[in-house]
Length: 317
Image (cartoon, helix red, strand yellow):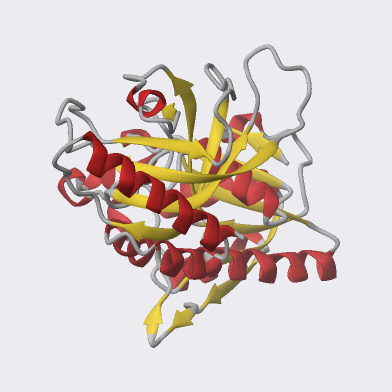
């Protein structure tokens, strides 16, 4: 997939394109329904599918007090868009200058450069200074500039609109299975494996600790069954990845009460000598085993960890 970070980087003569515009946070099933529709339209038109998105949630500038934590980083989003079949993505830097563009200028600055033949947006789409642009105005501009506008309805699930907010609510409650149904895949967190307190190793369950700047929304504290995908170290020439079953812990280790920040760590089942330090790994959350609790004494903690691993094994096999 081609990635542009500025409309000026789009080469002259680019297109024709079917463009889908949105935040695409998490690239959930509703987003993928739009992309699938764009792919069909693009096939009929002999065009390519282009996603137009932003480097951050526009609310972070316009209404920061209302801006939610993102489900995915920009890099994660780009990977998911590529997997969904998008041919190119334009990541717009959402700043005061972009927010101040009049709707017509936005169309000329972004869509015309992409050689657009069809634009796909949701019925709540707003663009231009103060959000004055809506699908009706976009359709009028489309008639003038020679492109169609397809207003895509919401994807519904259980009588509710599938949205990034819904996915976020489920993850915040620890319901990773419910989130996976909306996402169409397991929710993931990606980061570098760093040195921790090595307490898991001392207890017989060595864990890979993710760095504090791990990408992706971290679910509620607790123990989860899932997978660790080794994406390789900084000096690995191969792009081969390895996927391991894992017991995943999220929280601050309340038994010892010496971890100030929430952390994600994963014990790879039956692996006690695996060296992942410096590697980037992806943690895939499949099922929540239990919430996070404090135990009285090491023996009680080890007994619970042993039971957790047995339950994780049963879930994953």
